[in-house]
Length: 411
Image (cartoon, rainbow, N blue to C red; front, side, top):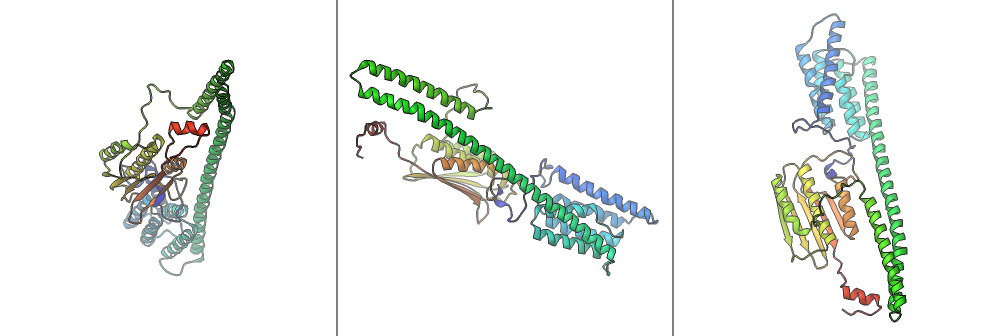
């Protein structure tokens, strides 16, 4: 989930293909190796050009070590930059190469600019320039050439990182805007078609039913009204079925009759599956159990399913608990974990959500029932998802018939 992202952090892509569960990806390792090799080649070339032809073994070792902090450039970019500056200061003392701005330092400063806000980036660029300038001048008064080289290179690298970060934020925002617009347009289209079906066919059915009831003595009129009613109902059913088929476009055809939709009574199965998957999970049911409307029960099930899935994916070593509370006119479900795992860094609908589109789906389900959903990090650590769903008393069939006839129903 994204709820554990540090405030002010610039979102970057999630490292893919992590190496044996380590906190860096194969791409991070390749970048670190590549930058380190470039600095090593530059050091060897400089040692040949200046005529000495000798290579300082301690300088060579520290030059290799300076590339290792790049493995943490995504999660701890500022700390990685600080370690790189310290190690490269040692390299500049042990193996002087004149004014230069190495590949490892370039990658470290660029990563800090990409992942952090501009005030932090400015401070990192100044620190990189000053440290590089002083260490390359052996901590004496630096030359004008060294100062211009250090500050110029730091400014270019930091500016490039900030520019790329801003461009990616705009791209992500435009992508979300286009997706939201497409969803809104599709919803408006479906709403228009449903309105047409209801306004035409259902209204016709209601009028024909009323006409048949008012002319029960005339069998011919009743027969014609019932024929029209049947035809209109069949046409409305076919059109709504076509509309639902559009919504299900791309789904695989059902090879077998669909299984019953899960509900609140299936939460124990979810908890057992979560335990088997390695996440210790407890279920606490409060209040007298009673059957829930199918759609409400399905919403409760999906919320718990998504909450436990996110806890297994992002909470790390943790424990989880599920609490289902039956109230007189509402039901609440809460999914908690006490983990401190690293959330994914990909863009998501909102900065306070973990799980991104999973939480968006939860919010839409809860909103359909007029409920509320709260999701975010807990003050004591971990993450919490709390959904409150109101229960509307269902009208009996007899009461509905009497209401349609205009009779008063007393309860």
